[in-house]
Length: 122
Image 1: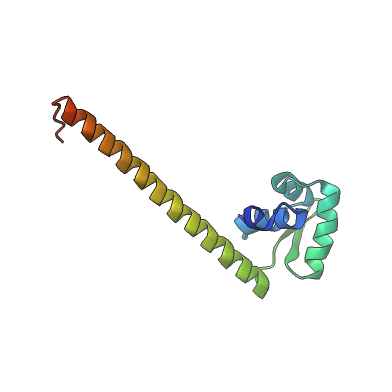
Image 2: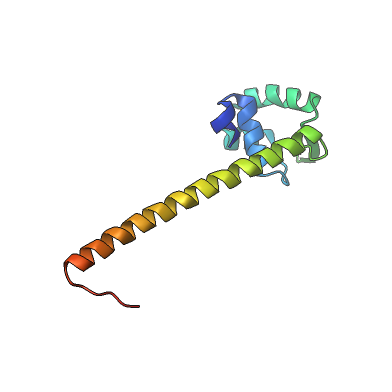
């Protein structure tokens, strides 16, 4: 959601991915793959996000450290709430558009059936 609003920067892409999965931790390779950012770029951005305490290292899997959003950080909490509100509003708009399309289709069907003397009953 963030990248649709805040642009396509690597930091935005990484935060967007992690915000979609706040309860899970990921390796640098997995973050790079899912956020569609190169691994060297993820390493650079990771250092910035760690310094700002937006992400934390949770554990190691093999020799690979895993990272996730720092859910104790107030800014991260605001980001997650914002992400949720955006998703909710988009879903509301899409739902309204679906209802409009369905109503329009139903009106066209009703018009066609009336003009052909066809009666549809449930």
